Image (cartoon, rainbow, N blue to C red):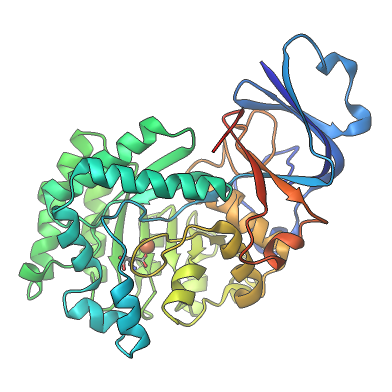
Amino acid sequence: MKLLLENIKELVQVEEQPVPFRAGKEMAKVNTIKNAFLIIRDEVIEAFGPMYQLKDAYIDDDLRLEIDCSNRLVYPSFCDSHTHLVYPAPREKEFVDRIKGLSYEEIARRGGGILNSAKRLHETSEEDLFNHAMDRITEIVKMGTGAVEIKSGYGLNTEDELKMLRVIRRIKETVPICIKATFLGAHAIPQEYKSNPAEYADVVINEMIPQVAAEELADYIDVFCDRGFFSVEDTERILMAGMKYGLRAKIHANELGLTGGIQAGVKYNALSVDHLEFVGDAEIAALKDSETMPTVLPGAAFFLNMPFSPVRKMIEAGLPVALASDYNPGSSPSGNMSFISAMGCIKYNMIPEEVINATTLNTAYAMGISDNCGSIARGKIANLFITREMPGIDYLPYSYGTNLVETVILNGEVQSF
Ligand code: NIG
Ligand code: FE
């Protein structure tokens, strides 16, 4: 079964020789083909090129559908490598509390924040959690996301963490996009362990990780390693325990201070270290030549009025940078990757090409799927979107707040909403 996209004004993020990610100066490079065609066979990208190379041979009996993409661009789907989109309820009251002067950390200290979501999650059925999360998945798919990582971390006890991960597994079995599950039992310190966080880390290590692994519920392990949350020492113990069960690390680090989280992530060969509002020379040196993807979450910095990560400095030092949404009820209640792209340009001074690499290929790497997703390359999964009529790649981050995604193709199938 074949699908032909023809007369594409510009086919974006094309790779003849796929690379796992782009770093430093390479981030400014995005290959595109003007006036292009693209052929999808079953769920895979089979061929592409300029229209004049579209041979009759391609147009055979197998051809099921032709889509005229005149004046439209075709992009690989966004890969969103950091979300918490399984959650019981929004937290807009805390948003108002912050407007009135409370800080995110103060709200957390008063039992709001993540602990508030954990309490609500405990009272919410698996069915309801699944349904709410599916609404959010539909929402992000319409905005061009074709792969998403989802974390647990609103359970904070064994039973509820497993409940969240089972919901993620059910989402994985239901939707046509690529899902990766991350176990984040160490997301916050529950009230009863406030005076002894190490004891809660022991529960994560001795009780939760073995069960998560036994049911094969997670691909990765995460820890919120930051001031007022988990210490570097407890983070390292948890990462080691997870790695023993084959769970690679992806950690929250340096959102609230220069805490050593980035170095801990690199030490344990984390796939990514995420947030990175606080990055100095020592952190850049640690990341250099590592296999760890520095991942910045513009939505959280914007929504919480945090300092913006020194992305230019990282890119100029030769590092790769990925941009993900952090979709969650407390610090970034949006999974809109076009808006994340706009913020990449506006708040972090990235050029549109850098933003494309940061939201497709580099986030694909940060979720361990860059062999199959993140670019238009032969043999990769046909997850892509066709835009509305628009002039060129600069227009997408420029048009912040507008959804330019008109048609979504996942696993080679045109989606209808
Ligand atoms: O990535 N930083 C820690 N965790 C989430 C926030 C979760 C919440 O507030 O519910 C984040 O920003
Ligand atoms: Fe997060």
